[in-house]
Length: 173
Image (cartoon, rainbow, N blue to C red; front, side):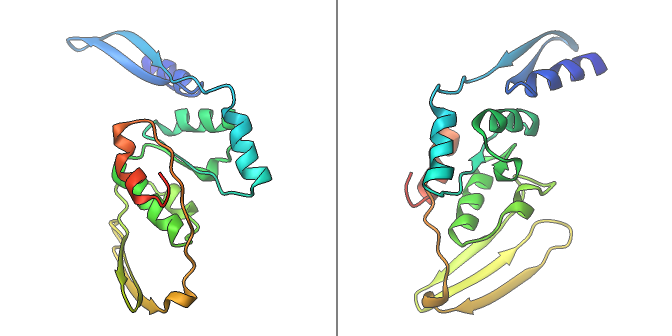
């Protein structure tokens, strides 16, 4: 119902995950669930970004509204948030960052979690094959030497089993 949707949206905009409790086909309650931020989280993100000059991202399975609310609390810009991300989307983000891609297009994609980029490494150089799962499916391939390659070291911090694949894909996890 519109009332339930409005209340769930309000919960998400404060950084909570909204859960509807139903009995049969009737909503009988709403739950607002959140992991509170550590007191030092905002200061840590600020230090990483402003003092060390690191590019800090947040990849989460939470909804876009919840993710943006948490990002605001952390002082992260919206263009550094990947929301509603399944484990594979987090791995794809890690891989794209490692290869020096600006991921605004990836993060803002309507099909978050379904985007598919594959990277195939070759011993003599790097061959990059890009495959997109959107309706304008395209494939591009280019080869270049390792000396021309821009490779970014990516560190990943995760708090759940769904983060395991991204932790394994990161250089430091």
